[in-house]
Amino acid sequence: MAAPSRNRIGEILVKARVIDDLQLRSALASQDQWGGRLSRIVADLGLATDETIAEAICQGLGMQRVQLGNITRDAGALARVDVTLAEQKGIFPVGLKDNGKTLVLAMADPTDLSTLDQVAAKSRARVVVMVASEREIEHAILRHYRNQEPVSSTRFSGSPSQSSSGGEFDEQGEDEFKVVDMSGKTVVKRIADIVPPGSPATAPAEKPGPPVPGAGASAGDILDEILAGGTPKSEWTEEDLQRLNTVQQNQEKSSKILRALLELLLEKGQLQQKELAARMRL
Image (cartoon, rainbow, N blue to C red):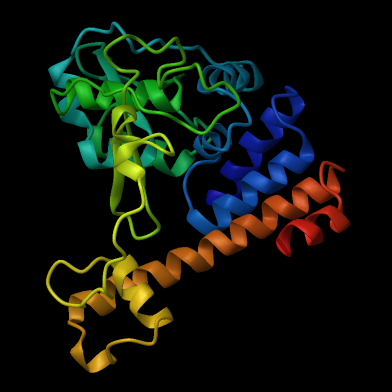
């Protein structure tokens, strides 16, 4: 049932003029490669904000919107939905009604009927669905299931001044975000950790020798070792090879995503083939 759900949300966003057909194709290509809900992918690609997407889904499906920022914790409702399912499916149990016979459920994708059936079966209650944004649900899960306050994080979008909740960055959260490399290793955790070019911390240092694979070696070190024609594979650990395999898989996925984005730019006339070829020769 994944395909109808995916297409229905895409049709709603295109009809509401939140995205166009070419942007939908790009989002679907990303979904095919990485998986995930289309609404989340559209926001992550910077094609629309979480709030705009949620409002379009509300209007397209004729459903009610729920704001999760200041809701009261309902322990009974939380007990009806497993936290793992909530995180995987982008859902949040808002509350119980009718003496526990009705569960009010916030969903980022209300067209996901298989998830609705699953929640109804496990909760043994009639499920009433309301629409919430992906980020609202993510924050509500952290607060009410995990007892954690969400940390503001950057999202690739067309509005860099927005925080993860759609508003201005606050003084405490604007310096907190995370950047990871292709192997999933955290590279930068805070804006303060980014050193401007030309500063003393980035001054040229004595060139280090080739990395030695083994304990503490990163996937990048192993990749550099291959390109340099260094230590033979027999001296690598099983963990090194596993990290290297992860890097290779992620690079293949990234290559396919990059190809889809370039095709989109060419089709929209935002990029010329001659210009692209010239830049690739630099």
